[in-house]
Image (cartoon, rainbow, N blue to C red; front, side, top):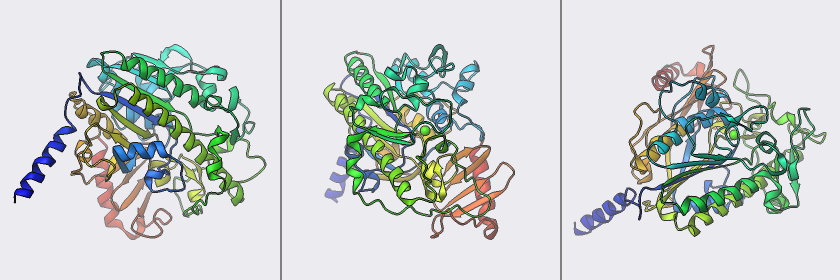
Length: 470
Ligand SMILES: [Ca+2]
């Protein structure tokens, strides 16, 4: 009995510590966004991956093993991160720009809300859809803001890539993707420093901002967006050798699923020079692609390590909430897709790690189904800001405290279609009402549509999906 009470007291102290005030003022937020990052990391059980820095962050915080994004494309996924709202099922890469043009907005953006509460809000790199957050032909026209009123300051160092559009798909030493398809290499391994690719410059700028903001009294909300492992798969050469002889597991369900699905032709992938080879029929080439993707992941992992080290050195680690978020997944050949624009698990499942000072049971994973829209209310609760009333998500603080109470589902959408992932099933409701239903407890999973065999499950899940869609 005494032991139970003592345990309870310790437990209560630990639980309250997540809400404890920082040593001075309000808690800061460091949000690290990574582009096209699959949950294929050491800390997600993939021991062939070299991701020691992200793994360490997961060991110090909470890894969400089942985080789903709202959309399998950069723009609409970042829209839901930065507004906390579901968008329409046909949400596009211009979603934030379109929102920015509309003066009457349903609620403030996540950074705008923090700015209004006295935070300095700074973005470096690719946080919204355009790295830097500006419009215009080369994405560098500073009077065309993707998110008006949101950032105190926003930066995108471009170096030899000249402008944010050039850096977005940049290869080594200033190579910019041209208009002509198939002229830029799909992967590259250049023997040079981290700064030979755009993420090196973004990281340098991020470190400088972290140093500068840490020296000020004002609390900060700093978002740093890294571009790799987005195509093309180019990274400094020293990140490739760990994969040279690595044994990668076979690609699960590599065939195109039968019947009508959201399968996509990987148009983005085919924009690049494939060296006369074919990932669909040449397993050696497919393996090379996977290894170059992995090298890009190790490259961004090293950049994450530099950012977290700077946070330690600035003395602000104990006053700062760190979020690492992948904007969506990517198919490396699963379902015969080399890309992301589908509503399969590979496109929608992405990493989410949150480190809160004083977290209870650090390193333990949270198995709840959670969504990107949940981050906005979570960050409000952790920083003790009021939460705007009309957000689409729910706070994850109970999950962070190690007492998940949710039995939730995740809503995603693309190209006019909606999907709901529950504990057991994925339902996809096409815009013409065609239904795909997949049972994740079966060996076939998303390779066999069982909608016609399970009409009552379909009816129930359609009802749940409609309830999530206001
Ligand atoms: Ca992306």
